[in-house]
Length: 571
Image 1 (cartoon, one colour):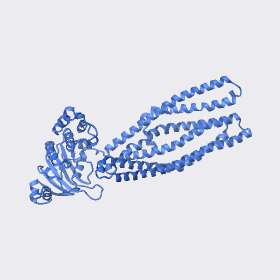
Image 2: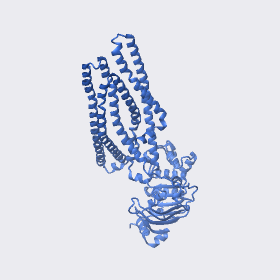
Image 3: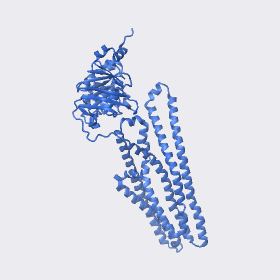
Image 4: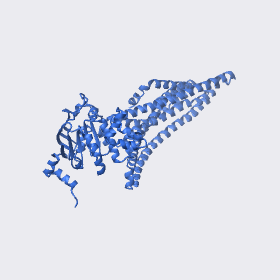
């Protein structure tokens, strides 16, 4: 884990080395004070050498000024290295998330993913800066203090340094508790974020059902779990810090007793003993810093391990010999395709059908029958368990993910618009499109005149998920986005089922225009929208019925029953 963390320093190794050099100089300059103090107590002051006292003071002042500049650089540059490493990690994780299959997002809620991307990486800035530089500085200071203190009195120095194994023992005993507690706290924070994201997103539903108390109780439960996790963490931290602090306090007791006894025996002079007492902070300071770094390391690594866990997830990878799907015609063929989401019960079984380029097919049937799943398999959002799916005579696995999806467009019931302007959401269909092409797409979707009626026109901000727009307006923007993308294969997945009948009838004209000269798959519950397609299939895990509208009605089977159910007259 440490090796993986260190790898993120590579792009900034020059700045990092400069930082370590600054830390080294700060450590060396820190040794000047006790050295000059000892010299003054043993020589300059007893011999009344005022010139050397002043010179020593000026040298010390100069060293402090240099240390101030070095500390500024080390703090600024060190934290900026941490910020850049944090940025690199977030970019890497975001890029990874874009390449993960749908199943990952089925299994992980949005709040949990955001927590790993944001909260878990927040401590990285401090870890990336403080752990290497403070550890390096502390080690240098410990070695330097040992040499200096040993030059005063070796036996006294060895007695004081014997306390270090006790600190190492305490660290080893509490490390696992700290690590476990910090990991649990990260899980708790993810639960809180998930709960909050869900509640805020669904605030309108909550208000409509007057269920604020239920949402509050759910959020309270998650907060309580987080508090419990942090209680364990702070308990372990409290034991570690108080025990460590007690041991460092013992240094003073040991120094006082052993040093006093040595002074009593005449083994050490009063000046040297005074210098030793003053200089002991050279030893205690780095020890306290190392103790603090243990806490910081456990906190940072708890988040880093969750981050590494995401990077280790299996992503969508093109097959070795995959090629780009260019200038697709739009022929589609399913041969004996079966699929299961959980590896047990099949959602689809032995599905076989063909769609010639430019033709349309409708998938109808009860909810949960597998209609949307067929579309998801075509776009390789999920991988089939058996059978073959071909486009233009080649298996879809022989095409790259990017080129496959670039030739397929999907218009769904739940239109997703991004926060931003109307123009931003339309141009999302083809980011390299010109302004004129965007306007033309808006005209094709019959949304241009409405946009011009707005104060800010195409620069109008639509709010989160297009909250400021009506259902019909949002759907037309999504259609404009699809006109701009101009795919050869089109999927209409319940594209108008969320709209009222009047709005649906108005938008149907744009949909018919969008479907021209494209291979089209229509998923629909409203059978009025599929009467004119070239072929209809009733899906219920398998293909239960198929044919033209009139043929299926004349058969008096499942399709006829569905049709009569929707269009029966109430007398």
